[in-house]
Image (cartoon, rainbow, N blue to C red; front, side, top):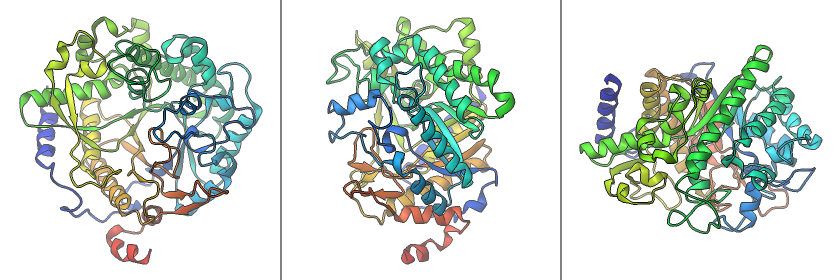
Length: 505
């Protein structure tokens, strides 16, 4: 009860500050030297978004290839070429060194390494990841590797519907075994899955992510699926697969490799729309569904009570053995945090005979983005501290890496990306405050290092510190103002000289 009271007071405090933005508050000057030496700063990407070479050297299609080629992305584009990091990784690592990155977070393409999802390893895929990892390590950059970033081999989707089948646990574990065996001598930080709390919603509820499954009235353009039950089934199998991989690593590789196994969670900061009790309770439900759906089993061995009550027989149950395997299976948690949403109670959604996860929550989410340029996120840095405070109080202060955080702009926006500079400075400052307040946060990765194929917008929007000219034959990279700012920050130069610095650039 004490934690709940503290959290309620914190929510009320933040709610009272909802009008504060970087325009009305001056951030404290910060630099890399304000953080502990063991804290790691980097940037990130994912395989389908940057690698390209979709048909090269034995790579087989993933569900993202199929989804994009069916015209389901907003601009009808695909990742066939993307940023072509497959061929340009040495150039990109040099840019990382020039920027001052201490770490690089990337994912492995399962269908590049094991084209059929199981069985024979592709030697060319193995060679690429060995080359990339060694290039990073040789330049003093820590590789932080994600095993799965939405891109399931299409072969497994065709064979048994991927994450909807318990068979995925064995195949994912065997794939992870190859990665640990081949790369674990140089990789110490492994993340099993990226945003597993988003995949069931995007892929199996509303159908905006592959495999694009949904059912009326919850999604559109889907030819198959059942939004009322499939998200819960996929999530359950994801948790079991993560636990199986973690168990494998700790039993077979930990003693020699001394690494860490974590999982990644997407996290909004939720604030009550009003101070009414109903909106306060709705905000807790939002956290229990969006975050607790995965964090509760990982920390306490079972789903939150409100999730089980709302979903009823539509959500699978853990056996006692499964509960023990899932609980405590993560050494750390990666958080992807971008913005703050406001929560309003919506009790009427529970009156529907047919319900999906969204209706089970009985909430409405509201974004306060008045005056924000189209195509950008509102800059609400307090959300970073809020999310970290929530994890500290609710989940006993687990080790955390901020895996993704960054500003979205249109791809053809100015290279003078001041909104991204303000965003990064504000959120890193908020992160520092959370660290000083006792959050066990150990690293920060901006999203993203390069402009890339974005999973919802294709090439319309960008997050990169480096602009990629997708129309040029060599896909030339150019540093944006944000790349210069981040490099300046990482090299220990105080942001108190920011105005002069920005004039110089």
